[in-house]
Image (cartoon, rainbow, N blue to C red):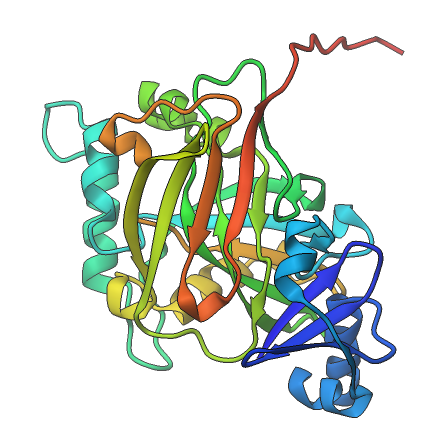
Length: 321
């Protein structure tokens, strides 16, 4: 089962090739909260609502009518975060960016720690991953809309990832809604200057969707990431995800995010990205305004597409009160 959300309100449920509106449903978030209140699965709530008229999901996407598949009604209560160095092979690009020539880089140390301790036995706690913050729901960009790079950025590059969507119940317990494709847009040139600039490089928008996979994450995800420029493919490469291709389990990444009480506030929505091993910057690609990022994987339905835009220069002024 896959869910999509309309910008004007409304939820679409796709089962196989059949996409239909969920009756009397305004948002995925509302359905998730309803499922928590009823102590049942999200699929059960959708079955209770019932499905209405059929829709052409691809046409709606091409018309720009699909939003992120889940949003919080108050963007301040939606958090975009992620983990890095979580995939087998993800250390090579990062190590090349951060190695000093004086021994093993911090990136390689963290990657090796994940390989050795990122998949603990059930009931045990594994090593914690690298973690980063991207912003609130204000930086969640709908599929098809532009990923805007700030004027001061040195780069605007794609990161094809899988993201988990979670809502916190009234008792502070996290509930996983589902999984989606994500473009964890970052500034890799700034990050390359100094590893301590990683936090700066991540304070960018991100996009996810258009569809939310309800149920378990496939263990072996094989997707494609590409950049289209002036109507032609500039760069294209496969990417792998799922636990068979990762150095951490999803459960371990979830534990180390939600172990913080700050991230267990009732009603909050979390979009947590699980990392990647595939970046165009590693192949010497320099993106430019107008490029279109495309991320796809058969398990997740429609392709996630976003053009690159550069923001006009702004000078923030701090005024004393």
